Length: 453
Image 1: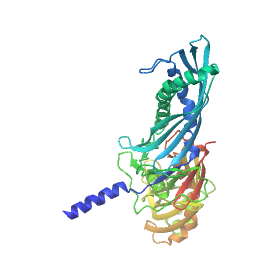
Image 2: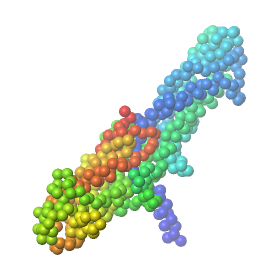
Image 3: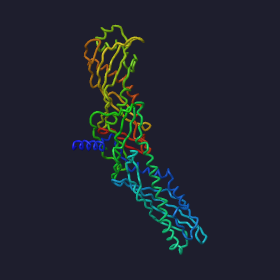
Image 4: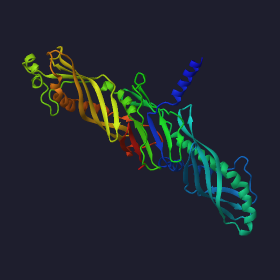
């Protein structure tokens, strides 16, 4: 029984302590977009328009009629992180309240106020998305000016403040906070949607836990799910490498960290796309791809094929691609086979000359285009070459090192780069524009330093 309980607890711990494959750090630069959210949604103007309408339970003020609210000032929003909670928000704004006084003249009261609330950051278990929820909203009157005669101020204005501003404005203005948060929350909506990697599968950014708020940023940990087109989940062999945000970035800035393990699992979706058959006789700067050219490296070829014939090459990647990252450098490792054939006329069977096991790596450069991570590869070096079979007898495969290296560089790497053009999807949150990000290769991860402009 204890053993079963232990296994159950272990299972739970595994679920709740899933190794993140991507980390998102949201600084105040990104969170200050709440200002644009309020501007875009015109929430305060809508709330002010409602203020002129008769509200249920709203008391009339003796001596003041035709109450209207107009001239809402552009809000100034101040945000502060509250560790372990979320964000404290203060909206400073002003408005003009007009009406008719009992004397028949126009009344005008100019109000400056602050709306404050704590926006708690939660994890909606039903949707799996981050969500802000406001609590403790208050309306604080900063200043009140009126054109009423001074001898009316104590009685009429105090009555107005007590009966209307203090009691009614919170009910009218605090919904603005909720409405803006709803606007912001909708910009998380697509975060956990599966995003395609060409036609080969999808990547889904799943939250590992409730986002954590510190005094300087909000951190969102992702445990991405990479699935093949048939629904099978890609599992990268071996434990994930540890990775972390480097030091030295401004507290207000935001970064996204993508682990080398995650990128490897995404490239595993493309593994079959790296398979290729190449039958072009002329390729780039290479000499003609014929048995005569090959005989210059393997004398056995001249005996087996005294008459020059065209070659056909088949490359298969039989192990999942692997990305490694050290500060400033990223390598893509490919392990597979290269089989060379004598090409025959149409309808004729090709003849295999030899089958080689090849292991090589590529230097990778990263960029962002249309909000997808792009890779461009170039040959770093041929790591190993071993003969698996041969129809032309035994030979020392090291004699082919130069030939195969040049062949990979000229004929195969362009194929790899064509495949990589599909791009890898990035988390879709708060309408983020990744095209402005600055990229840096750090230990075991790629970092995107997010920029707004």
